[in-house]
Amino acid sequence: MVEAILASLLLLALIVAGVNIYAALGLSGALGLLLTRGMNALALVPTSFFGQLNSFEMIALPLFILMGHVLAKTPIGRDLFFAASRWLSWLPGGLAIASSGACTVFGAVSGVSIAGVAAVGGLAVPEMVNRGYSRSLAA
Image (cartoon, helix red, strand yellow):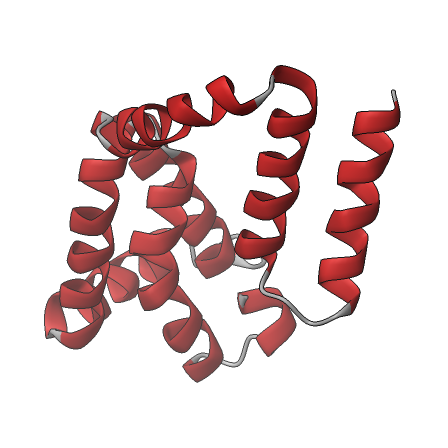
């Protein structure tokens, strides 16, 4: 119990001090691991870190982001949203619904929901703002 409190206090102190979230989480997690399991447990950190980075999701995510940028910078993306807005123009907020649907499909296909947001979001936000949607709704 004391270990969890110490790790949580370190996390809060680092966040208040302005340390990046990833570093604060990593340091407080390492402290918690060190306090609960001892020095031998720290030897597992590199293996676990590599195992997480070596997953299919982490390989596919940059490619989905690249695909989203390609769609955003070429006329294909604009044409795609033009077709989607025409198809769903009878619905209020049709383009927003099309964006949500595209994110859902990308997430279902890839197995990583954030990949859909990364791929479609780069294209959807500027196009929705251009079509009069508020920035808060588009984001």
